[in-house]
Length: 601
Image 1 (cartoon, helix red, strand yellow):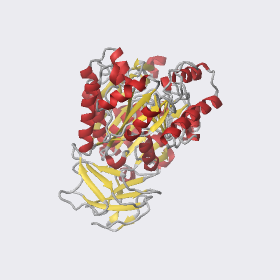
Image 2 (tube, rainbow, N blue to C red; image 1 turned 45 degrees about the vertical axis):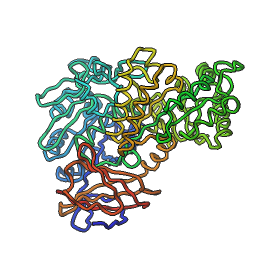
Image 3 (cartoon, rainbow, N blue to C red; image 1 turned 45 degrees about the horizontal axis):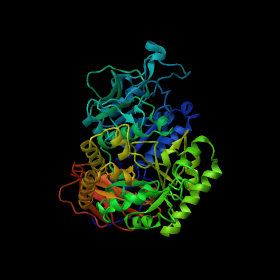
Image 4 (cartoon, helix red, strand yellow; image 1 turned 90 degrees about the vertical axis):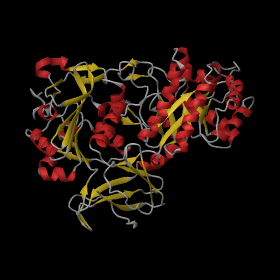
């Protein structure tokens, strides 16, 4: 039971191992039709990278490939079959019946936005292919014409349902509708759909039109996401995709998962923007109030120059001169990164106006970083844009060239750290975005006070964000300015929040760390192959892991009830169970390939 064996992870159905044929339990098929894919490879790439970031390596199957597999093959080989937006508009007739049989036998089907809406000639069908499977008429063009398309809200019936769909605290308003930073209620592209069966559970809707809808079929499930989440991911908004995938794969399908955080523990980045000489006064007061703690790693980004709004105004932080002792005082509490280029407001508004071109932007970011390195002795590896001004893809590519690991970002808000997309293209493979966490329309403590958000609500949001990270074993970033703590009188409230974080960290469910630390883990994480199987005896789950660097500190989760009671934990794994009874295994050995066998009930 304690043995570990290095194996290949590409074990297709039918390959035999000791004990009989291995049956995959976390393999997913994504179905496309060749005509739809031809001009939409960028959407497929967006799906691939998003799935990589949650530990899933999909098997892409054309409709022709699918036709070659029997119904028994489908049930045996795939835990779930997904029909992604844009890529599966033309499907062979009869596929609805096959997917119904697949679900009745225990398979799970996810239909996203527009599968099976066109015939072989490209004309809209009177009824979409999966209307009866889903119990939803999700494409009503014959009936409504152009009114079959709309931009609508994503509204949940209550806050608990939004939380169950892994929407982070602060992303829904008092009406339980998804909101965005500054913009308020967001409207997404969707169709005017209608429920046609009484056994459909609608978890989010625009009026009477379902956005997230689930239906039990036999021992399986069918789910509709009525929004083009692959397209949206490719345009810098991955929230609905993240919500739908976490819910479908890990809650509905109950698939084993590779956890996208170090050691399978939730992570938070507490990012402080140090803008100007106002912090010469406030940083010592923040420290004396006990809000900088060696036990809680925080993350600082600093604008280095002597000016703030305009050259010569003398209002900058002046990192190498008058600000030097204050910057040196931060070093014990976390890494120092760059906040824009040299002069906070001047840089931001000069970029916005076009006064600074790409070579200028690169120069001032490098100048800013060099001043910080002069003081700290460490290279700059993190970045935050002043005023949120971060023109893509240019700025990120500059950061990549300058060796920056991670950056605070106002796109993809509500998501875990990601390799963000812009205009259908991944911006950087190596420099990761840390999407801003928001409370409705606001993000910083200054904004909360300006808009009269009650201290109790701010504290509840902050604690909720930490709990969300711990419970979902995910990573998020929050930001503010040190002067917000002092001038907005948040010392006591924030101290209570830090106490909460410290309790979670001491309990082993949360870790505060830097953008750099998390990025370096995530770069390694996405290189990992993780597959799980039931062996031929049906008595064991076989877990295969492979990483070209090391598996150490990677973690995976098996659903509650999937293992026999009182089993022996294999050598090389550390086990804990979470509040839901899921088994969380952390790899403790420095190995590149491991196989573990765990007993089923």
